[in-house]
Length: 145
Image 1 (cartoon, rainbow, N blue to C red):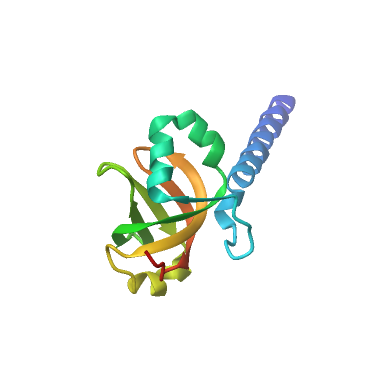
Image 2: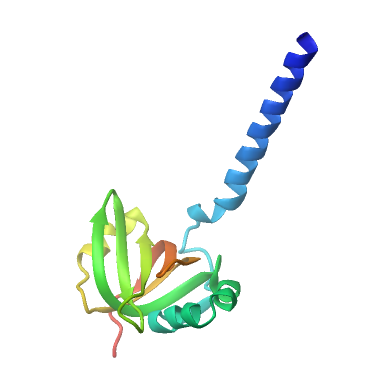
């Protein structure tokens, strides 16, 4: 009986260690400081959405997990559940770029207006009807047209 309990505790401990490793391994980019990482891709919000709609697999290879700067026009801004989110227009009315902003960006976000052209930097996480960017920060809010 004692041997059986040791095997169970060892197995549980191993599973916990594997779980902790996976959490840290695949959520590491959730703590990136956008001020210190270099940009992999610069693109407009319309082009980003179009590339996912045309060929999602190719777009995932090109953008997913990469640091991208997206320039676009603000469709909406929300401040829900302690999350600050900016939505940028795509080329069609059904899709947008969802930019989940760093909490320290709240002051800058409150000064933005719908229809304003801006540039945002963040980690592209993929596409689910909308392109998703996490850990975003404003790069430029005074873009000339």
